[in-house]
Length: 462
Image (cartoon, rainbow, N blue to C red):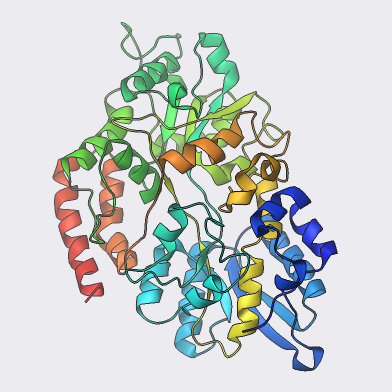
């Protein structure tokens, strides 16, 4: 394995002295990273997806990495769409042209690991003077998603993302309602959340759900939008009601009473309480949830933390705030993100590791955290000094650091998506999610969908 060295100049630039010094535990700089000799120069490939901001961020990271590691060049193989990237990656693996390193979707990670397609990086990590330190990452969440049953890592989480509430503070002020926050005493109970959503839903005559004469066919302002066509926001509700989306045995668990009740509550927001728009209604309006929050048509949007990169105070015209998801029996939000991995077919594992570890240092995460796209998974970036390196005025609402430092360590749930999930979701769970969104009672759909999905998972784990 290569010895590790990091120049003082780049060490300071990568992190801000205080936060990164804490992360390294005062280790001598020369022990952190070392470049291969120029005569041993190697080139590695790195596959991934993302929009303009992500593309530019990766290119900047490559530039900085190559300045400090002149013996390694990185070729960025960019695919804009995540779903298309997975298809491209699988095609290249089959053709024997897989990249040396790459983004791995959380949905794909365990499937590819179980097929031997991802390199075991456990020994690289444990022998690394920086990444191998206890609690370098936010734990136990990082180990929960990265380690297999034998404790072996085949990738490192790129960051954390999780769902929370975005709200139009102007509408809350007009209604005289105190908004939610991230502290435990600021998290709403479910029934209180529904009542607030009713107060913030109004028809053309200003009537609210439950008022005499309320016109549910002519709603001008919706209380909340909580998407139910994708597993992450659904799983957040399931865990908030004491259920589990994935069981400890690596199967789908959303046929439990707790899960069924939570999912029915999501459907009831639309079809019973009349406080949330159907997807078709939003399509008819031709607006995203961001646009609806911004123009006063929507009071609260349940969306991922990544949406802060476009739904932040600098880009919307109304005062915008953030708060925790409501709890049913407990606070919860699902923590997830893509992984960075080395493909097992690489012929350059040492050089690939140097790039992989660079992606797990503060420099890379800071760029994306500053623009509101990511939340760090590194402990040093969540300290008071570390927060100063990425929390940005005009991007992050005043209370946002509490989401990263208080709420997620206590209430964030990191799940490991089992092998076979891609097929199970496509064939059985996604049709059930669509039925949920369209108002079909969950008891009529999910027990059978889960049974069929678990048959697929069981076969994949043999």
